[in-house]
Image (cartoon, rainbow, N blue to C red; front, side, top):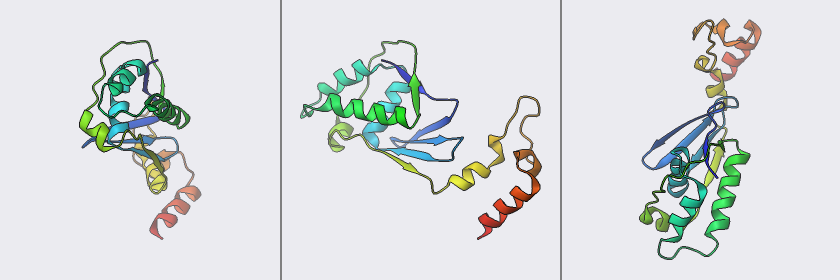
Length: 156
């Protein structure tokens, strides 16, 4: 099975082997540990699950339940709508053995809502084909009263 980033809802970035994926509709963002980031990066680059699993199994001290762990991680990403099915591809997986063993073959995904208000208030999310991005406060699709309430809440 192949997957790709759910670009209709998500924006992702990888820096220093850590993936941060932001749901642009809810303002919730997700952080992945190094091993989960490697799997995520392989997925969005067209590597299928079978190749990732086979690559993991070649690593020394790989736990016997690695398939279950990987499937649970993929299920979590699907539940959070971070990824979605993609067309079949057969690229080779590239999993760093050192990172896998340092992470004890554990895939971590955590969700955060602490910046939700700020992420949703950012008018860059309100881009339309007709008008493009217009940074005036009235262009972010809130009436003046809603905008005022949001500003007051952010000042607190």
